[in-house]
Image (cartoon, rainbow, N blue to C red; front, top):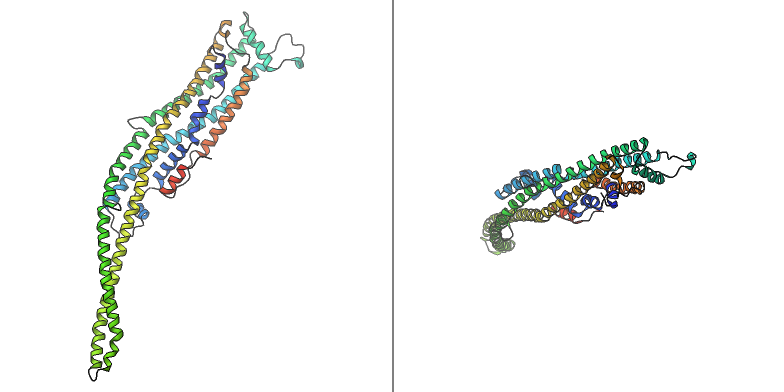
Length: 412
């Protein structure tokens, strides 16, 4: 701590504190929380939910591919639950840490200044003539640096040192938590990144299969398209026949002009053609129903592929965002560790007996530093409080499309 600037850094939040906690307001964080919130609450993780999402009717056949996708979404839901418990909630705890540390620091800094302010300088004629706290502090340091410091000044130094112990302990604990979260994210055995990447691999592995089978050019849809084409040709033939039969019935009264046999012929034509027309129209209705059923199946397949692919396409950016959390948490952990170490150095110096312990240190501006540091911690605590109140409550996405839209918006 020979560099005077280190004393200032020990009490004031560093830029790394801001940088580490700012992750909670980033686009990446919004994207992460929105993605995993939807993974837990919105994705089709049961047969019933998949049917509802695809707009299927109760009688519609549930394809094996749909069941396989449900299993994948169940796995992704588990990853989302792990993210909330192991990452999201603990990230918000790191924001809580800053808010709570600000409270402790503010109280401690006030106590330190109060200790100095209570120091009585010898030779002060009246209380009204007492110097300001900065002057008292300078005088106190000079007494500490003398060969024969007073018992009163030594007691203040011990109290000063004791007041720092809670801050040192708190900063160290916060450093440990930040590094622990970083390790849990990047852990190759059971970390959230490893689980997400395993899920990503599984989704990618099925993408080609699902697309080949159910995509617009897939085997199933090609077969359905061929069936629709055949039905449409059948319908054309039936409609021509229907038209012809309607013409026959409309012209049949002409048979009445035939003497004697006209009415009999008319009756036979009407009965025969009329019955055949009814059959033709029934066949037309059946063919139309078949076309509608096949088209509904094709639409179901299209919705399935669209939803699956949009979900799958999010993995790369989400995985990258999680990877990026690691360095930011490391930065935050190192910032807390630096605060703990610097305060520890100050504590060590104040705990050491003798004038040599204070030599080479720039102590005279410390009371000013404490005032500035209080404002700095209040500022960063205000941001952290905003993050913890809004960083853990992503907007609800009603669809994958809306999920992508929400994830792409910047934090306010």
